[in-house]
Length: 329
Image (cartoon, rainbow, N blue to C red):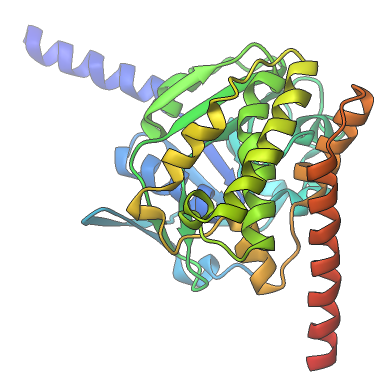
């Protein structure tokens, strides 16, 4: 009887820990978050997608990594932002969609938003539209996942991953976030502020995306070919200087460690998402990764000549790409 009673108590405790979780933007990162949380069968999950999402037809996410694969059916999916029901809301869509999506979240109250996006400034943008009762957390991760154009196949390319996060705004909702984060990432590190959480990943975003597109280089090639490697080094050191101006000390050896990370066989022929967006003719996260970074540098009187010159090259390449696309259409 006592053992049976304890089982009942544990069941109730686990039920109390269950959360309603909404995932806005079920791309590579969002698909991974959904699939991993589905494996635990612990939380009530909702996918929030665009009206044109292929997931509205597929109704499942296939996650593959190493020699394993899994299928996670989507039981709750919507393209109606007024139907968002999560108390914990992951925002994992590309920041190019923020201007369209963020105003549609203004009706929500007492929620916790976790913004896992590239670049910097996303939390401040979101805060312009949200009620003050909501909590806003900014987060970055080094996880590398890709999603097929078919819309429901997500591939995890490397098992080890981290999540850095920081509170941008404290609302009224108190959740056990680390219990959820630990289900998703190998290591989880709370930081003192958004700059501490975002600048280390911004170093990777800015340097690797520019070098990858300019030199048509995959992730592994960025570490092995002389020219893209040098550009990553130069831009990385400039980002480190900007970070230092905002109280974030990044060891200069971080760039060398980045090259070691990129050199692994798993990253041969694998590209950063911005390179994939460029090749596919999609909108790119220029504002949040580059313009906001350069604006921070200007405010701190830090010069970024390599970054600015490379950004100008990228913008010229985008113009040429768009012109060629128009001529072919």
